[in-house]
Length: 225
Image 1 (tube, rainbow, N blue to C red):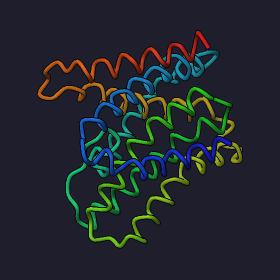
Image 2 (image 1 turned 120 degrees about the horizontal axis):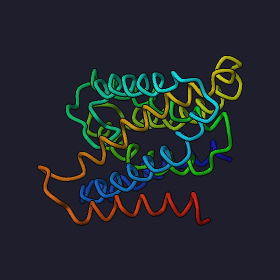
Image 3 (image 1 turned 90 degrees about the vertical axis):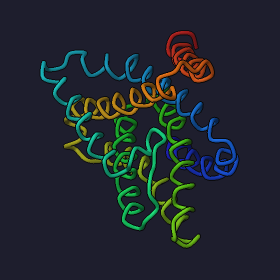
Image 4 (image 1 turned 60 degrees about the vertical axis):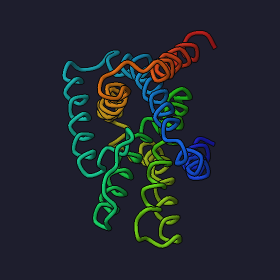
């Protein structure tokens, strides 16, 4: 069921791309909400899990995840948090590959355990990323068929990551270390979104409210529901 939800999240982004393209402030608000929600789930759920009965060097794997995401964002041009520039074919391939690797990685923790909160955090994050990717691809010289092939492969990456994590013994054996790497990825993305949530570092009440709502929804899901 989680596989279907992850796939549908991408196509929800595709179907709503027209709405967000007309008024980009809504995609920024959605990104702010998703960044806050993802950060909350990472801090409230994933971090305590990897540090519980874990070796002292687990923090190194979190730092490794931050490094990996930094490299991926060099090629994705920051699409994970709303910034894409350029429309040439080379950028399209790099963008697609880096976002696909990111999606593959973020799906892995779902293969180790039934993280319902994390599933929804990934879904909420994936929708605006799919919107950004689809709008970018439509503005290239790729055919309509090629664009939807790109999107379809991208939609399969997170389910594939979850499947591999549950089937490959090596990943299962070192599941805390793998999860720690993904924590680093999530920390990088979510904080990048929050730090860039205001234009020219000016206070934006709407984006602040979106961030606050993300925190509150994650907290309610973790402790009240």
